[in-house]
Image: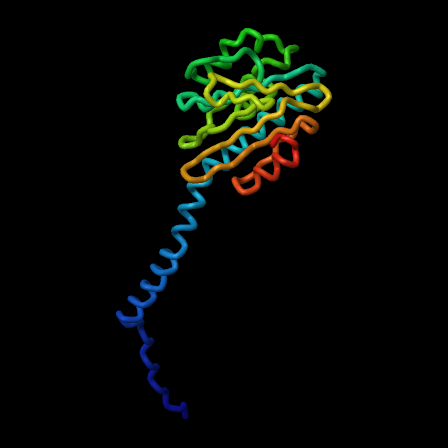
Amino acid sequence: MNPPRHPRAPARAFTLIEIMVVIAIIGLILAMGMPSIIQAFKKEGLRKAIDQIKNVCNAARSDAILHDQTTTVYFYPQMQERRYQLGGAPQVGAVDLMQAHNTIAAAEDNSNTNAIVPTGAGGSGDERAGTLPDGVFIGQLDVNQMDFSSSAYGAVRFFPDGTCDEMVMSLHYNNEVRFIVLQYSTGMPQTYNADEIKSALGAYGTF
């Protein structure tokens, strides 16, 4: 004889109040995390600009050592420009980057490493020439302790022995500022925030 079967209790559903409490908790967590997420997105432009400047400096240093000749990077600090260029002749005026690549006659000579290398021709276009992200601008541009922030451009030379002109550049984005420093003896770009820069330049003997 089979034992009697007891009817299953109906599955308990969430009440409206429980669902509202869960939604409120999720909303509170998102509200607490959103400022950090927004701030991270705001800083992304500045991070990209720092990477661009460091990459073009490192590429210039490598070219100078590899090809045993002085290589020059041009920085254009004016608000309508905000760009950089490795090699070639300085291109003053807000020109299209592809136009800058194509109009520099020296770039046609592959043996001249001081010429801009177009994208796909042995170098990254972002490393060789580019424009800073929207909202990022150059505030300070000192080369060998001379101020070029109000000039059309400033030129930084990298030498075959791994040294370079001294440079201090400040990059600004909203209320954030970062400094990129090139020390003569190493030719390697270093990044500092506003609190670190004075002691760093003092150590280099710039102050």
